Structures are given as structure tokens and as C-alpha cells.
Length: 108
Image (cartoon, rainbow, N blue to C red; front, side, top):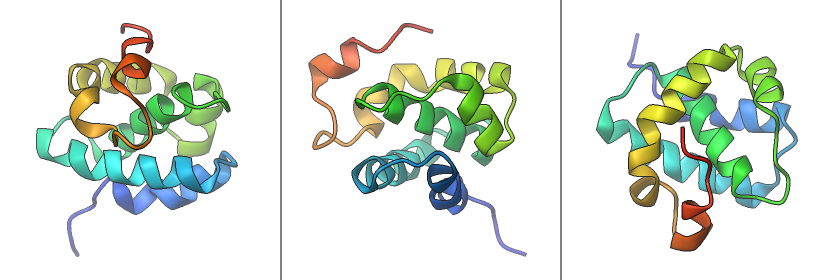
């Protein structure tokens, strides 16, 4: 059995949340880049990346909805967000969000 990567879950989770194609693509790119930081479990990272991507979009999703769609507890998503937050400028594709958009993300 192979290693599980956060990206393995992204399409299903994003589909469950009704995210648009551009947001899904950005989430997939971001989750690939986040794997180099080796933070937490792949599913937690996938959920946190989805949270970040939706917060940067016009179609914001509540943490509760992301928790239901991914099966990851809200507290776990918050903790993963806290771990990823210092790296957002490295993981979020710059075609999706500009530096000033990233500064508007709420601090964990």
C-alpha cells in the first residue's frame, strides 16, 4: 500500500463543498506545496488548505461545512491552519491570490 498524500482527497472534498474549478485547482497546487513542510496528517492539511482557499475566494465556506465535508474536526482544521499560516505565501498559487489578499487572512 502506498503513502497517502493530502492531494488524494482534494477533488472529493472540494466536490462535496461545491467549489469552483479554479478554487479546486488552487487547492490542489497548494496542498502539493504544503507536503514539503511535513505538517500533521494529510487529511488535516487538505481540510486546512480548503479552508484557506475558500477564505481567499468570494465563496467563503464556514469551518463547520469543511469539517463535515472532510470528516476532520473543526479544532484539528484550526490547528492545521495555525501550522500552515506562516507558509501561506509559499503554498498558495500567486495566480490565485496576491500578497495583499494573503495579508487579509485572519491570524490563527
